[in-house]
Length: 381
Image (cartoon, rainbow, N blue to C red; front, side, top):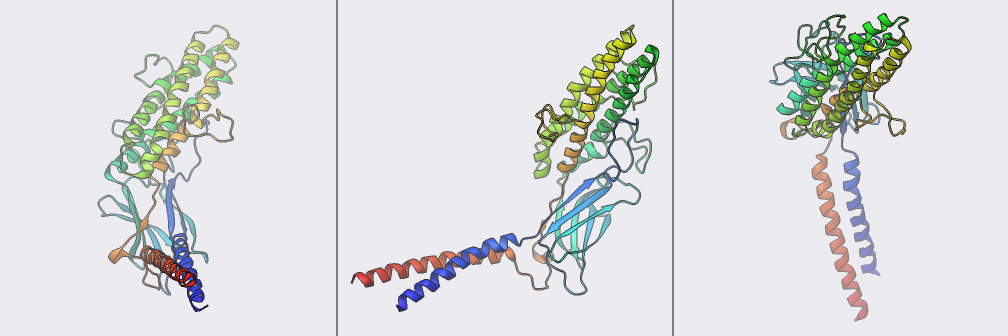
């Protein structure tokens, strides 16, 4: 009877010791920081889209320890070399340990322009941090802020700076759809063919085979097809970066950009046929085709009819490539250790506690097994 009670207690302690590590793991703080545009996405109603790009940061945290009395958490973006900091504000922790808030730069500054690290401090001491690698930072900036050799922003806080390739792709695909929309509304063959000519210019850029100086060029002169190629190439190279989010989203960005190349090439061919047509209805048919393909190139196409547009072959467009590039640069900070550990307000080292609890559980089961074996021998004897 005595040994039976001991065995029961040992087994209960063992089970509880194995449960504790899981409970501790569930209590670990997790969070993300995602950059997006505070403005609306291009929809084909204008030729320019250069304001409020990547100027908003959304912070989402869970299981965050409550700060001590008089203490507060603050989120910061930090430049590559650590010389510049941008406060994203104090973090308000809900009763369940969650935080959900956002920051928008007051001047619409691109948050990828000089920053590549995010940090959360508690009363001035770092507790979480994540920095993009040098290679990852380069790929993200080439796509979402500035790539050498691209046409410059013509307005906004970064006026005069070359555009990011994914920025240019989304903007110019929107301008292309705007030309297509206007062409199908034309009431004369001359008006339609002028819009079709401009459509070709935006699609190919000033170096394109079919570019014509006989009509205006409402684009930036680089060409949607050139931007699409640049985005795909950048994403292909980014696939070898060391950042998990960069490599995890690069293939989707490349696939979406190549979809744009396929669709806009076909749309351009339809526009060329429209410029050569002598009948308005025939020219309109060609431009309706071009409009459909341009719309698909900007917004994507739900080819499998599952209710969403994925960043995959045959579906993603310029918008999906742009959002995919933002996902490449998503921050996923981790708990710091040592002098920059979590707050000294009663928290424990969760990793160590989980490990010790697991060891205890294994030890208890071993002891329990020994007692069971011993009891069995006693009964037999």
